[in-house]
Image (cartoon, rainbow, N blue to C red; front, side, top):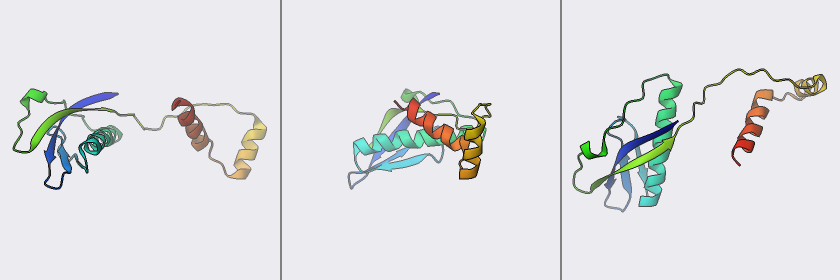
Length: 124
C-alpha cells in the first residue's frame, strides 16, 4: 500500500539533516546529505507504517502539507513509501513426495525457500 506524509527536514550546522514526521510521533531519522536524508526519510516512513501494520495499530491520516509550520532552517517535503504487509499467511502447496522427504532430511525450510524464490522472481 502507498503512503505519502509530510516530513520536516531540519538543516544541522554540519550539513546533515534531521527528519521528523508531525503525524507520526517518534518517527525520526537523519541523513548526512540532502539526498541521503531523502532516502532515510523514505526508509523511516516505510518501517514505521510496516510496524503499525504488524502490530495492528491505526495508521494516522497524513496532514496537508500546507498545515505544517516550520521554523528557521526547516522545510517540508512530501515523502512517499510503499509499505508491504509482512504478516505470514498460510498457503497450501504441492510438491512431489521425494522432494518433501529430501527436504526434511536436509533440514530445509520449505517456507523459507519459497519466500526466497518468490522474492527473487518478484524483484525482476
